[in-house]
Length: 195
Ligand code: MN
Image 1 (spheres, rainbow, N blue to C red):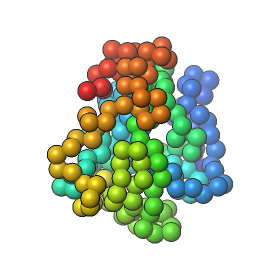
Image 2: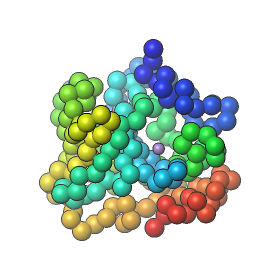
Image 3: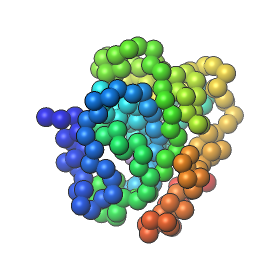
Image 4: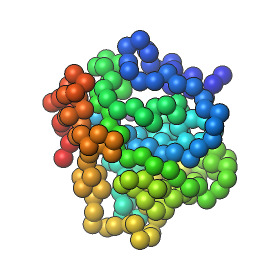
């Protein structure tokens, strides 16, 4: 049993450019958000912990408004190598569509044991990303459902919609359509995820 079994089972690595990856031994505190135009647009929020990327799919993306509680559906752990992936997943494969590295950086949890806090259902942390900064909290509600909430601080905003204000890749500056075009993907479908 590996924490990456579900990840590997869902994918055919001879068909998709996504990394197979393995559980990392070196402990870092990286975070990544991948904007993913699959069957529906969502933002995959990933925090490095216990050698993998703990992952949630956020349909509406993050909000800087502390009053907005964004649904975050827990999904399978991803390998740390996934945090560098931007490109297309072929149509017909699991998650088929376009993936953008929307934000990257490090995070500081308020506890030393992130895995334990997640199992207890609440993690408070500070993000040091290119787009997202300051205090955030992930709160478990039921089953695979969590809420991603911005905490009240100087980096909160009731007026800025960060997903439309900052729609480009942090590594390539491309929009989804540009990523799809460069990789021979479905440009029209990808474009529906761009503002
Ligand atoms: Mn996804």
